[in-house]
Image (tube, rainbow, N blue to C red; front, side):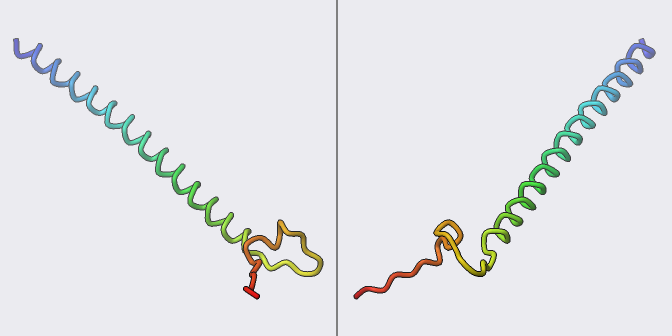
Length: 70
């Protein structure tokens, strides 16, 4: 009787450890993916506000176009 209880407790602890490991692995993976997305978004922001020199197309000029009412 005592042996069965000990075996079940040990099995439960092992299962709990495996589940905790899986949850930890998934959460770390998601955190790393979120950090990568933030890094890419920051890179895109910096890249978007580059100062172009010389002849420019409207694509490069973008939102810097200012109109004045006449």
